[in-house]
Length: 370
Image (cartoon, rainbow, N blue to C red; front, top):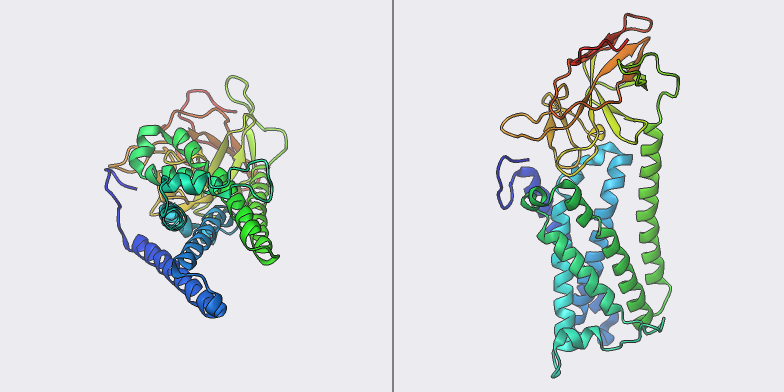
């Protein structure tokens, strides 16, 4: 998180993250080329083909890892630090993909009179055939998507496009993934038939989809708290939402509560008091309720953006803000006013009253919630 735009805000974590990722890529491709050459012996293709295959396999493996980080962090919060620099992995995947494509174009299309790219892409335009489908086209389309995502990964574009539009663009990673699965599947079917590659690819697809489904089910279960009749209503008769047992919220963490309209609220505990703010981070829409309190601020698990819990404002010099909500605690239950307050509105923290104790409420509005 920064107050200005810089190419990369380098810190020890980013250096370690990128060093580990780059080293893994170099080792992966090097080992693949070396082992393949030794195993195939005289039948081994040239180093260009081995490098082409190694880069393609490495890029696909890294894309699987990047897609699995999000749901894994939701299932096991201890993995959240892996999210902070996930965009670096995206740029790395696009770079690997471009290197793979450059070798393919140069090796397979660079020795004729035609444009090398066209020579590769439409060398076998048989879209109606399953066995001879031009898988190269799928790879090129995926590379375009990954390239656009890498080019717009910086916060400069996030600010210019807005979080919603920026996130929508980057959700096309799933289309790129589907295209690459087809690219690899049809490519292997045409050149190297056998059960091993399809089995590994199928395992990867099942892993990615399974983790996303499991994380989604966990998020739905976590948002379904309360369920009883609200104990009070706002001044205009709007019923407050039952947010579950106040005492079971861990200190420094949050409970995510679904409101009737579909919005989600992160109810954070700091010591013996509660505060509530919108669950969507103003940066990229990250799930604030899955983060934790660090240095006195609610910290988004995606990129470390921070907010003061009682007013939803980022500490100076930052200016990001999220909506806040009024809370009340009655008989040990959290009650939430579902009407969001304007981003940055200060709401005094609500003490956690003991079971059966005196109801308490943070109230920037004039009306009494009871």
